[in-house]
Length: 399
Length: 105
Image (cartoon, rainbow over the protein chains, first blue to last red):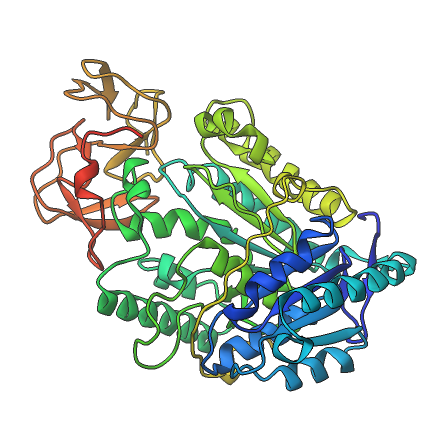
């Protein structure tokens, strides 16, 4: 039996392991004002998120709604220029109905940069005082939602870091937590073995279709989800990278298929389909690793496991990122940025199970407040771009 | 079933794989046991890179983790480096920066 955690209880029943103020700019034109507002506060207390586009987009609207009502968020400041298309009224209503303090500042109405920055900082100052008074409640490990991504993969990722993350996932799923892996563009070639793990044949068909969609999407774009650094690190093809990435999912049955912003209805292992539906529009599905991390967080992830071989230093706004380094040489070079040295497996200094247990223990420690490396270094990356999705089908969620 | 003897500097990830993965950087000229046969590496194999564990015919599937990772675009000899020059995806082409050839950072 694992010891209980403590969490901030939200009105939808979910619990947060952090209690931050989210500052959200609703168009790029409000981004700088957002940066100036946030500058006055600690990286730990106030996080900047936002959407740059001026054209309306249902996906971006839903993502912002999910992010602003994420369990790790305690209060929300919305920054509007005043003429953008983003529906700030709907977003503010949703945040208010969630029971969180919310304030919208419109730069054109406020009187420009200086006045908006001052008003924003004053409002946040009041909120921080209130958030500091909030108490926590008991939280069980099965209330956690944990995501996993990999980035800057090399030939070691699929041997050490990814399977070790998979072991941690197996442990978490066994505890009743919800675990989410991605991404369908990096599961090309794994569709049949993955479909065989689905809890129903209908879900298996959905998983297969999701990967087919990704293969078609990337073929149209002319590039797979494969960066030059992958090849330098020994990976030759997308199928090979996929098999390594697939190892992050562990060995549990696959309970469901979700899309960004869908929140797993209960514990189990879920695949996130990150490739847009319909005709190829808006460019590449996820233009960088942080786009995936943001989607995981929008689906409720309290923490994200990030496996890297070449050495990513990224973190994220809103939820802590645990950096698992697959390559022992990279770990020695970038130790300040890495939480877990999974390359020990390659050098015979630890087993997969030992590193898997270390990752699991770290997930609980971070849930208890321990800072990850990227958190303590102030990494609060965030990116959100245009996409479009159809809702998931009836066979996608466990009955 | 007996697994053929492989050099401890290389990993065999699936029993039916026809490639091995380097656990560490192995220099050119190194003698390496591959499937019970000693071969001499004609080039350095960096950690994470692959060599053929047996002869692979042009067009044959290259197997790693017990799964196909693409097709051989040339005949590959036992012990030869398996990478972009002799293996291609059956799905989408792999992108590399052409002007980066030979540079290390």
